[in-house]
Image (cartoon, rainbow, N blue to C red; front, side, top):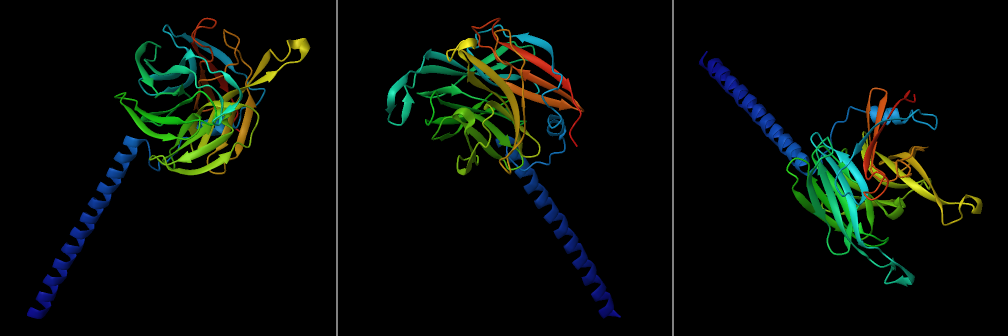
Length: 342
């Protein structure tokens, strides 16, 4: 009788120990998950579950006949110089821009691997409220690296490349906290990178070189993980954004020379467009021309470009004009309702 009672006590004690161990293990695992999530939030990384695919689905319904309507203009009443990229957080509008102090000049023949002089300039990241009022001018860059490019907001940080204003050069990748506006120099790379996105599925960064002819992928320490050629020659991507799942949506422009009757090679036609690319297969999923024009006569997708979707409705924000052109820099809003492709 006593043996059975002792065996029952031991069995109960063992059950308690196992239960405590399971709870402790769960707590440790939960703490590790929370820590990983916190690190991911702080650095803009981490493999996230992505449920909202409205933008990817809706863009697959965009074609040359999509009826885009301009619904607003937001005039910026401060010196904006040559605008490059735009991004939106909950509280701010971010606009990257380059202020040219001394233009670059082409060499008669390449020198030290460069086709032109470095020039001089100042890189800006303008921080505005949603009404377009300037709240802060963040100066970015070092030495010959003064040209900010296309930018991306990952939900926590704004990512900005600042490069030399010439191909085959160098760039700094910056991370700016969208809430505190603290600036972090993430790493340097050996090439001109004029645009960047954060792949939220991998936590990696993807940048595009001069004219978006080549792409590179890095981890957050700047280790290059892969590189590939742009399979598309339709437009040069200027400003891109991440789209679930592991896709990238870009806007851009190609300047086409004209016939003698249309003004000759001294005149150019700005062919604007948009393209969706897979960050997994590196293929272009869909590209569409965009022929709407700014106050100064530039195609709307010339530089800053961001798009959002809600249901079957797309909203596009662009800022193609420089501060000294037309009516100055205006953030233009275009909207369209589409039928997503099946």
